[in-house]
Amino acid sequence: MSRVAPKLIVVVAGVPPLLKSCFRRRLLKLEENRRKFIWLPMNNNKSYDQNYVRRLYLDFFDIWQELFHRSEHKGVIPSEFDGVLTIYLEHGKSSKLVLNSFEIETLTFGIPVPEILSSSRLNPAALKNAINDIIKWLRKAIRRGEAVLPAVSDQVRSNDNRTPLLLPERNFGISEVSRLARAVGKTTREKDFFAALKDVTQAFEVRNPRVRGRDSRKFFLNKKGILFQGPGNNRHGIARVLNNEHRKRCLIRSRIRLGVAYDPHFHYDCVTRNNCRLPLNWKSCHEQDVVIPKGRRHVNISPNDHVR
Image (cartoon, rainbow, N blue to C red; front, top):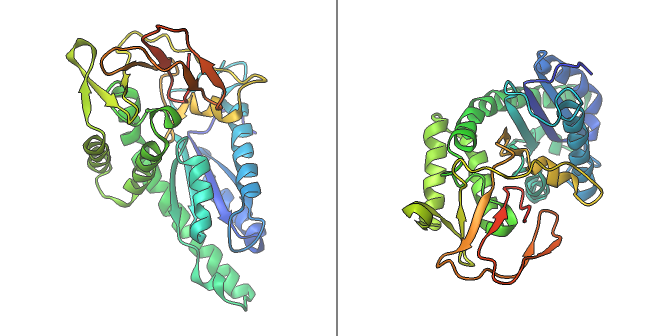
């Protein structure tokens, strides 16, 4: 692999195994010396399974480690890196397995499965047409994903204290954060990506109105009455490294959200709305139990759900 990190990583999910040889050759032309593709042929021709999605995620992690955690980078993502896309073929309800595994970390959205693949008789010409369709849709999806990433970056880098896009999935609320991530993926269908993303965040605020916290600023309040206060300029979060305790997802989520890198020192100062005592028991980034001292009135939670 080149020692120069690509500007874009693209995870491609759902290529049927009967197309793998031809797809591999065609994919090389899309790299254009600035993209790195990560893909695997499916275990079958019609649906995702958990083992396939897990293997794809592990491959993604390995490439991520190789690119951005070498000694010359020291875990710092280069500023010229645009981000990560996950583009999946829409194999029915099983596509949720891909969404559940990638949609928080990467900008994730689907492309159609060629109808011709549902035929019981597939000759070489039909397979060639199917590959042509997938490559055409993939090329278009990459262009649209590359156009959306700057809009997401504007939120998580320049507006991190205000945006809901960095809220931790488990500790804020899995259903709300997952719904938000899925809506961001759908902005790839729109013409004005910045306007579409603004609509998505405003819709989230309608469902989760911000309330006043410290300094009379407004912050997001979850269903359990915990106020997620952005740190302003007081950033003392810890850039996590992988060890025997943390999972691969802990590290990936501590660096990127919805496909773009965010400040690894960003965290939320979480308090109760009335600044009362907090619950003592919490779940941290890989669901490990964390018990805070009695009487403590705030807890720090990072976007990857690390609690301290």
